[in-house]
Image: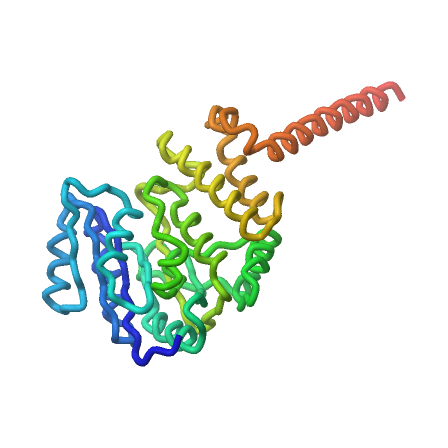
Length: 318
């Protein structure tokens, strides 16, 4: 996809991020690759996010602020879709309003993608952080830090070793999104997992940009870790997202019970079974393998406990 000086559209959904969004926008301004537009979609924030973003748009015309009206659906996925509708770039960079890009991130990935076809996507190194003032060290020697000529091999690697890339680690073409589809606005949790599964599974190959890095902020408020899901909507969305992914996986790769799907379902199951067993009960067919393994493990523990008790009694008689 050789395009001379391609335009990159950076899409940032935001809601009440006045405390951190300036850092995010500064990381955009500092990009060594200068041919970009940055579309910020504000979900009707109630803090002073608007004033901060508006100041950046006046400072640099490449920043474009869109404020949702009351008739538009709330949520990050809906905001990203609005961003896509307004984007004019050859490549798309998704960026959450509390995360940061290394100054050379886009430059390195554009150079790689511009030598490949339009369905090639790029990934890069990443690290979690709490404050931009702390010393940040990226993850090293991860199993998924490499090129993948076969996307099924990528999922097999994740299934064996684990792994995850946040949305900002990707750079991809508009064509790949048009082919794979926009963000699923019915999902309120793991919407990024479902979206990027479609992107990755339809990619011709994955290129790892070794010199590029992004910084993914640890959630402080509104944490959506599986153990802290705080609404039934998010719980059901989590399960539904993996139902969609599993169905797509079977169709795309003609394989059931893959290590990738089983590992992810096990993580979801383990988090739900402590406080949200009703979700598992309602989706017992979806979790049948996890339930079966859980029951086996429970029976095994009971048998081991009985054996230890008998051995203890026997030892007391000697």
